[in-house]
Image (cartoon, one colour):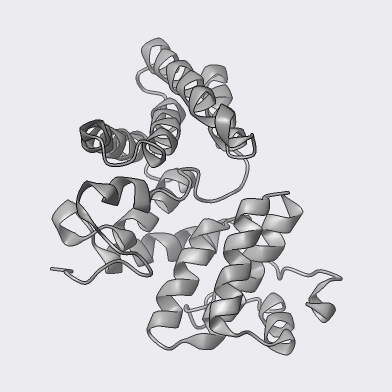
Length: 247
């Protein structure tokens, strides 16, 4: 049993749905392969977060409709099921504490699980599932140790993961592993800058501020070539930036 509240989150009734969903495409990289309609639906999900707030709900609704069309066309397309999860999850973030949030949450989780049934190596789905397992209370299926293992796998296999790094940074910081926490947050910030994700840059900045990270620590974190929190495990090549020396 894992009864503690998720890292950095407060849980209050049905509002858990709105609180938990960062962005469904948790890696922050390019969409994984799938049919054309599925890829379009995932792109809509990712890009809507960059639109004016007034336009996002309608855009995610359009993305959800496109994703459902993709599933009807090919029920075995893992990317299509992930596209439903992605767009529905973002819609639930703005749905507040309505009963539809709970019903939608169940459907959203079912689509995420179906994605992994069809493709156990779907890194976007693994990253999203890992984040949710860490943040959900046990009553809703939370399992922080399992979620951590999923995110650490994503970290080993994907050089572009952003949210996985940020979530692991919080986990490591909570247990007192400051060096790895700073490294992950610093790397996440540079990846977010490179991909133009201002929302994720802000999250990484907030984590580095919470950690009170010094410029030298940030520079050292960007030069790490092993997996933070996974001693002796090789990770993707180091992340370098001309800004590191002045941040």
